[in-house]
Image 1 (tube, rainbow, N blue to C red):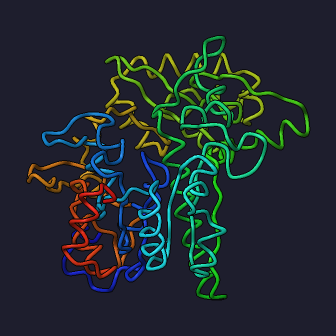
Image 2 (cartoon, one colour; image 1 turned 45 degrees about the vertical axis):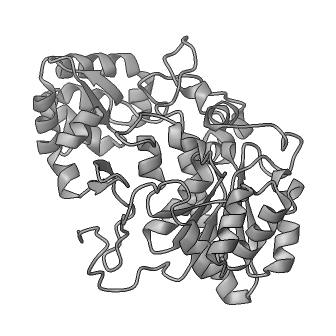
Length: 406
């Protein structure tokens, strides 16, 4: 895999020449903008003067003044300050938008309209503009005005209901920000498709995404199953309705293993390495195994509980059965495969301290993404952006700063 650095790129990055104005806060829309920035787009992050994005203080603190979450998720961006709520600030924003290809925002619906920056206004000023709008419930519908965060999206979209042990309470599905990241990823895909449409037609468009929609979209076949049979799937704990054995099992050294037998052939291979050909002969099909889940899971549980995690993985790998230890973040940092894939890179924070962050995804063979900088200091690009892009001189910048417009 090519080294993901900022130098010696063999070809221009695929989004070189695209300018993105990031008006969002926290994670969803800024994550979409960040993905574009990793592959060559110029991303200008607009923040409130003197305050900045709330993400700067969200999560674990760093050695500098901003959080580790900010340093990681605001990578490759230029920070400028601008009071969008003020009339003069909104006018400056319009100039910035007209000089950009893409705008990303995740305010509650109606907020930008209140400031005179709604899409109906902007598309007249800039017909080629692509505008990503992410909110809890979308720009339309009876719930459009409700506030929403990822946790609310997990609940409304149907994921929280599925998370946990049978008979227990619905649990947090791992990251409380999952819907933010998923919706940001869908947003980035939408932007790329809209930019392609601009190339074809010369006209931009608005992308409307609700946080819950990205969650609802990935619920397997639950929608058609309910529509056909009325089945409401409940919490299954470590198992699934579609395959058996398929879940999490504890090892002799008190670790946990994920095992996935998603076909009859894989189960046959598992039965062979377990030395349980009787199970393969009695339960050769997925349907038979699901009907006898308790017996199958009991046998697999006993087999795995009699070995260390390392032994289970080695046996499954040798037998071509999909298996993995359930890793902690410490395990990932120590894993040779993660290191070989360069999934973690270290970059300097603005104060010079080293910070390890996830690297870019996906891996492009000729034009790989890059991380040239971590989250910037508040307003550090004011002179660069306002001076070079809008042509404002130092006196005008000083006036705007005194009035707290920037």
